[in-house]
Amino acid sequence: MNMQIKLFLLCALFLINSSLALAVTGDVAGSKDHPLLKRYEDSVIIKYDYKAFDEYTVPLGPAQDSKQLTQSTRIEGEVIRLTYKIPVGRSPLEVIRNYENELKAAGYEVLFAGAKEELGKYGYFAEAAEYETLVLGSEPARPFQGNEENQRFLAARLSRPEGDVNVVLYAVALQPSPLLNALKQGGLEQDQTVIQTDIIVSKPMESKMVTVKAEEMAKQISNTGSIALYGIYFDFNKADIKPESQPTLKQIAMLLKDQPKLELLVVGHTDNVGTFPFNLDLSQRRANAVVNELVTSYGIDKNRLAPFGVSFANPVASNKTDEGRAKNRRVELVEN
Image (cartoon, rainbow, N blue to C red; front, side, top):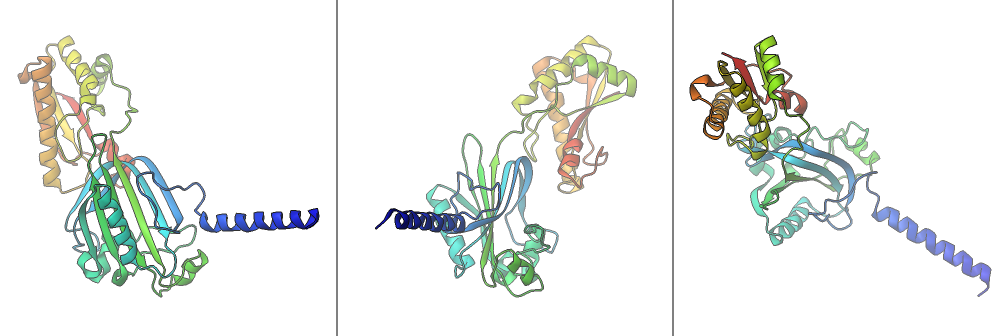
């Protein structure tokens, strides 16, 4: 075999291997698997989204209607959303079962699972769990829309000292619909399974807010009568003060010791996740917790502090966005 033939064969082999590699790793640009969860064999990432810290609603029961789940929980942490297309011929059941076996072997506890009408009547689940809003690429195509007869769901949790891991899976087989042509343009076929894989790793938010000094608190209260503080932290739906709140509490105590005649309303504010009565109770318990901490740990006279919860009655931003809800979750000091 002469040198030219050898070079030709080597080049051909290189091109074949390159093509096969692209076929196998044709994931959307910038995407990658999560290190805590393997992908289904030969599946391809068609959409990827990453947030270092966000809120996420985990469905724990079927849909009550198109806007509400019968049971759910909201968690905070690192959120990775991966949409995979599964090789043609594999059913949602087979895919979900493979993931379920993998998760159980790794020590995960299944929180909720279901299929078809077990997830709620009339196809409400996809909409109530906000899967219908997921759009692939630039095409106005939603792969989870109108596929209630082919849907399967699984939510599982792994408890760890460094932060729980929640894995939430929703799989459907694509059925004929007005959007099927648009989906085909993205390389998806009729009856092909698509799975939404969400991994949420619970962890505390990185504090980007500068702790407000006692002098600044005094100045703003003198000028406006109140100051909103974002350095007091609670777990979701709880009133236990987290350790990283101590710098702000220390500054509040310094303010009160520097001004022995100052009396304050300690006002708890929430966002609008949940009902008003629930948040009214939660905001009151959080205000109580702040007052109790200042009294027991910093020696402040309890008669100078009045805890007051207002639920989400006084927002400072829209509750329609994550950023707005974060601004509304606050503790406010009001001169009494």
